[in-house]
Length: 113
Length: 114
Image (cartoon, each protein chain N blue to C red):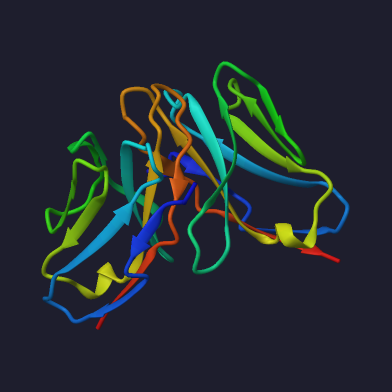
């Protein structure tokens, strides 16, 4: 039962343009969502998070949007840079489950220069 | 502040053996979680420790176990290794101030079972 889904296995974007990575979830109990970036043979790097009481959170070039009614979140990267090329994972957690994260399958982002 | 460290970084074992992996969290972080990453199953939660107690457990067989020490360092152990245990094992730590805790990952231990 895949509770967090990233339906796009890969995305290719031109340098300087916007990258939009999408994530859907099925469990309405999730109340905290995180995005991680991962390079091969390294651990995931935390990028940005959002709690269910918000619908938007910004940090520099990264903005996460949350649509609770659609059970959908997206990560916007503006402007995209070649160094952003990596695998992006969204993850979700729910109350009373401690820090257990449920991850999506990941989206490979390629930023072309 | 130093990040999450994991040792060893690479490990090769044979079927039937056991293995112990170590994780040192960020200073001051009391929660340590373990994840397994494989090409087929992605990132899956193994267990979480907080104040030396297992707080959550994922859907893994009893061959996978862990513990946490009073200094928050954690170890995980896999007994009777199987070929399918080959994976990247990741440790994450969190300050755990209540709700909405960011987790920070270590570089992982790449385990290969032959």
